[in-house]
Image (cartoon, rainbow, N blue to C red; front, side):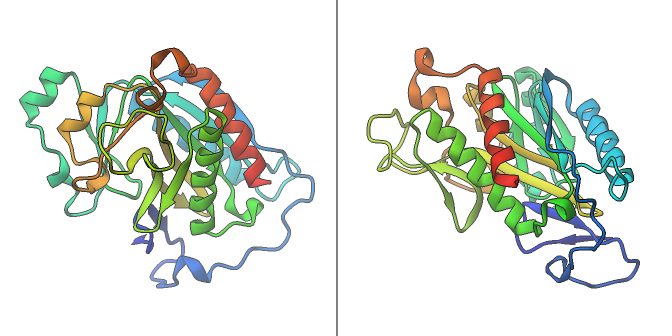
Length: 266
């Protein structure tokens, strides 16, 4: 049974058949092993969307099976770079946020794929860091929305490393940057721009999917959709803000994000 949590960036699997229990009613179980394996990193690799999801499910199963054993662990973090793809959630209005026709997508070399995460439509492509934390929220002692805030804060901390001041928006999950906070950086407009999208699924209190942080993706591809279903909200990237010579590599960005995520989860 699938329930949309109040934060629509999350899709929650209710494991009790017929139960209407809200995710916020969850009580942390007893008996979590005191010797918990720390968060581990699965190094950056480039993978199509479907194989990457299969790998997520594999790690999810292993973490679930180990939950109450001596091999229990906090979780694993996959760092991925996808070929160009637009993912569409099951929300009724999400398909309407894909603006391009099938032929236009084919001409642009962008695939279209349905996804089971929360949120709306999202673009992934080369130059974008996609982070899939497979986290046991029981072990982390986090409720779902606290976990989303942890993801956002980890991205904010990561961007600060590159002297980019970022913030959250109470009306829209993700991470944003504003010209007023970054007067020396390059913006395409005077509005705050989204630099990181977040969409999560939680199954048996272990997370799937995660976040997409723009380093230097093809920004023209964002004209093919309404990113995250947010009309007239611009999107930006680290390279666009800093200009190319000052941008980090995707690998160094992944390592910095993992460091901050590890610190914020423990």
